[in-house]
Length: 300
Image 1 (cartoon, rainbow, N blue to C red):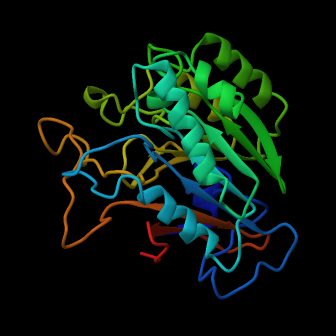
Image 2 (cartoon, one colour):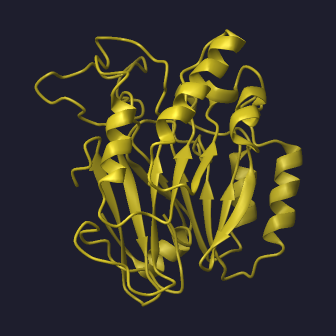
Image 3 (cartoon, rainbow, N blue to C red):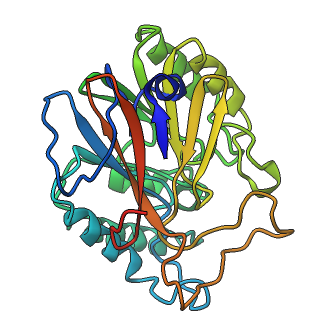
């Protein structure tokens, strides 16, 4: 998928990646090097659901994440950082099991060559204990960081059981944005979509419109999220929102079936609908391309 630089900047600022003074096309990351110091790319992985079992949905439930780790490690050019956008583990009512799954997940992803790895929770990780276990293993559930001229904002819209960002975090977001210039390159990571994609399936954030409203005055904003286990691209005004595929099971398109259930495993097309994404950022005016990869790292 190719996105014009101006449109991309309007969507977000950079970009499963983000934005610098210019965005360059993502061609074949395995065959070329990133030349300029302010060029970079990152990888987004989402919805790994470690601990899920279900032969009809994914008979390789203990192997899919490991295959994705191997695929990222096999990229000849390694990303500047890796972002996991939530649902690292599958939900469980047992606090001990929750921590065991997080420990196992942590051990698996420790095999990644890139050590600059950032995490955020999904509702499966944090919805039942308001993020307590997640914080023990991975730290804060919302935070910011800067990388080569891009300002990244990680929003937590899952720890609050009401499916909101919440008053305190919105105030925190407002204070952070006031420090940014109106043309700052901003990338936002969330787990749930901030806009109302399909509320009947919990594919929305109750107060997401307030967060979007705060972001609207900034001309270069892009949002990357997970939760819906499939690609989806949506604009709210000049802000672009891009959903990432999951790494355990795909889900149906919004409202396409009466009941939201994982799409059954297709033995003739194993790992169909599963994968990760990379986004390339360059300082020279150009185009931005978001590249989608399947679990084995094959470019789609």
